Image (cartoon, rainbow, N blue to C red; front, side, top):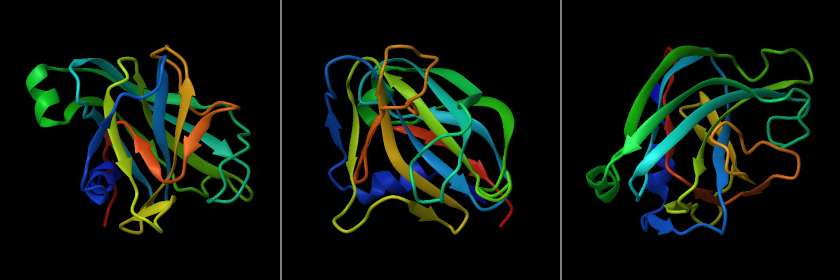
Amino acid sequence: MVINPMVDIDALDPDNATSDGSPGSFQVGVRFITYKDGFISRLGLRSPSAGNYRIQLYTFVSNDSTTLNFPLIVEPERLGYVDVTIDAAAAQKGTTVWGNIQSVKIKPWNADGPGKVRQYGVCYNDQDLKQYQHILPAGLTFPLIFSNNLSVFKYDFFKIDSHNSHPWQIGRGGFSTLVYGGEQFEFVTPK
């Protein structure tokens, strides 16, 4: 089974609007947990503007429930990243540009024992400020569950202009009903 939750999130917002973001550069992304073992072997991005982008995959552990957002007890560790180039045609059509990474094994949320929650995150640096914006329908908030195998958590952002950083910082921002960006990932797990 292959799960790309960002496709479903995109489908929830029929307007599929674009946003000029905010002044400055932001690292933006979504966090998720899984309920089964699996792996991720590629990362992708949709963008309404041409450019060079870096998509990153991180993991970290929190010491709370599967629905709370913090605190973190382990600093995020980057498991993989890929640089992709979106040309003018792909930007105009909203085409996802994919890049392969060395397959990363994904652990279930409770793999680290009692009181700990294994989380993952996919993010990219929004340096040109042009990005997709998805508004969840009324009454629908994170976490969103997909195929009973994966839950996507709140969108996060962090003001920084480094391609090698992540948005899961102390003092980060975020929304519970709004998703910026077109970062994509595929979680593969047995049915």
